[in-house]
Structure formats: C-alpha cells, structure tokens
Image 1 (cartoon, rainbow, N blue to C red):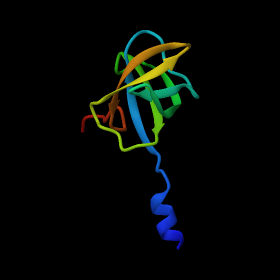
Image 2 (spheres, rainbow, N blue to C red; image 1 turned 180 degrees about the vertical axis):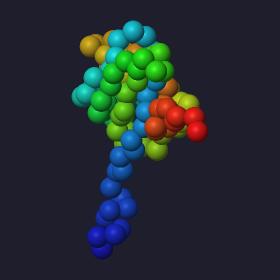
Image 3 (cartoon, rainbow, N blue to C red; image 1 turned 180 degrees about the horizontal axis):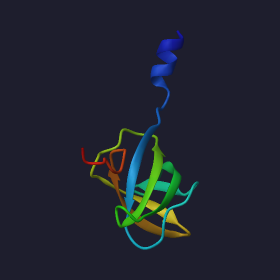
Length: 92
C-alpha cells in the first residue's frame, strides 16, 4: 500500500541554524550529529539583524530545537544551534 510505504520512508525537516564562529555555512555543506551525516545546508549567510551567521538546513530526523549539531565548513567542524524558523519575527 502506498500510504504504508510513504510512512516508512525517511522525512526531511527544514530547520534554522545559528552558526558559531566567523565563517558562514554555505549551500551543500554537511550537517552532522554524533559524527553521522544527518543533513545538508540549503542556504547560509551572515545576518546583520541577528549579529551572527545563520543557515537553513534539511535534516533527516526530527530535530531538537535548542540542540546542537556540527556543520562541516571547509573541513572544520563548526558547532551550530538548531532553531525554529523564521529566525526573526518583527514586533507588532
């Protein structure tokens, strides 16, 4: 049955990342947790509004908001905090 097969397939979860350090994550960079690749960065850039580097990533497991992952930025494992999207909500 197609519904049962779809339920067994891995799902992707789109999350925000606050990247530690000065280098921004870029499209295609691997996201790891406990040494295992769990996703990929879909976009990333410095955020002048937030004062830090941010990225959007697609993860293959249910993310823990506030948890940490590592992003491979040019061969350097860089810590990142998983956050909800959108990154910023304008005050009303």
